[in-house]
Length: 353
Image 1 (cartoon, helix red, strand yellow):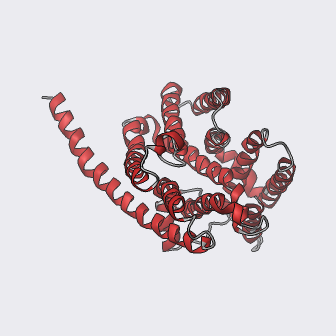
Image 2 (cartoon, helix red, strand yellow):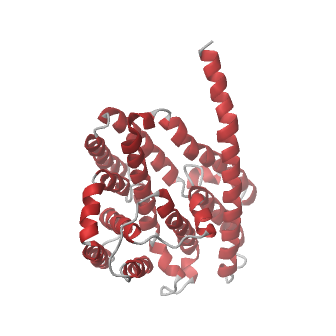
Image 3 (cartoon, one colour):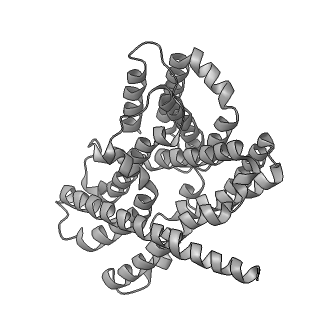
């Protein structure tokens, strides 16, 4: 967490270095470099979890062990904000074909990646169907895919019920999150399934009340960002000393707070963007999908033999993830844009004959 707070602190002071801050639009273009950074961060986080026993606690890589939840919270925030923004701009038209359009982009790459991983796990990790037992749902770290799918469906149903009453939609989603978190805790799901989902609702809330937020931010940018940062710093110190069993509940609050700070910082100062950052940002979902499988396969088979070469292994993993993410993106595009559209057209032709 210290590493993330240091990054946010530098970003905050950089945004205020020129004096008066001119707020930027919180757009896809503005958040694309951030998505790339977060994608790299989640890879390093999972690598750190594999090699943490061989590292010094004060090493830089060890600091990534606690960054998974804040990074995923920001992804949830961006998703919630984006859905609500599109709904407010396009109205009920946005909901036409929403589930097919949105879920296809999530579910097909996930199923394809899962199928390939299961085959690879059988071939290279002992010759048994270990992925069902240890990596449900069929892919390491794919809980995010399941959760975001559930939240997309919940958003669609809430938007249908709300009928362009955006505060009503917001209320329904907050109520859903309370029930969702309560059910998963009662069912003894691991904490990563529910500790960051409230950030999705925070993103929607920011979008609904954005005009008022931006007015306050325009007048008091330095005060707001510094206040959010100081509160986040204090809470991270306090929460680091509480019992492990209670820590996930603290992440609900801390993760939501950090997403608000990130929103303010993006509005105040866009991250530096280049072709690499834009490419990583555009591949963020594919990177998330393949990274768990690649890390598990590479470290699960080879790490025991070259345990002192973790830097080399990390670079090798990054290379594999990048290549597989590009391939997955291209295959997904071919299937969804060509094959699926033909199937849908064929079905419509049969129906309307």
